[in-house]
Length: 220
Figure 1 (cartoon, one colour):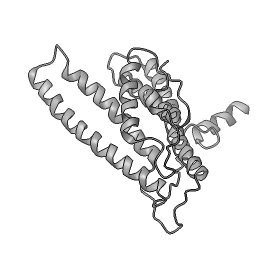
Figure 2: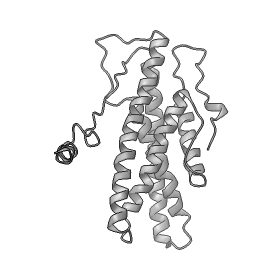
Figure 3: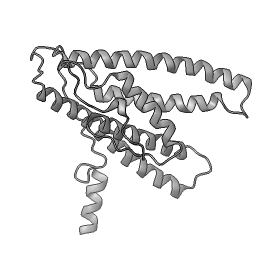
């Protein structure tokens, strides 16, 4: 289990209008954890905002590798069914984790008495959703780097991977900048943070018709 990084300790900054964590530190944490979790089982001991980000990242990590298994032509039908249920479970946990990142930020804003004017428009994406994208991007960068380093790959394959890596690196820089700008606007009270509730229905036995009909049949 990885420990909370000393440079990303989720302490409140001296300036009450400063975001809790710079996006560059969040990204460094995500990049480091991807590498570590390919050596040890995914886990962490972080708390506060960092802990919620780590939880989200862990579910994306687990989702990524379950989806790789699902696409293998050598996997049995029984294993595919097991993997599909794992994907549903991890995806539900991932969506919950996105909301928990935003919920933490809402609580922090209230603790600092920061509130945007009611007429101020919200962004189309919350910080939690943007950090989710950054998490997936770091997973993609790690695995694209693997393709660059493959000893059995052709030169053409490596050049293709290198071109894609350059695009991913540029996207990373743009996304870090955008997250920083969004968090700065929110903590300056220039933009409200409204948590976007996913309202996923497929894992809810009272909402998914296949689940509640099956329950009704078994009870009959």
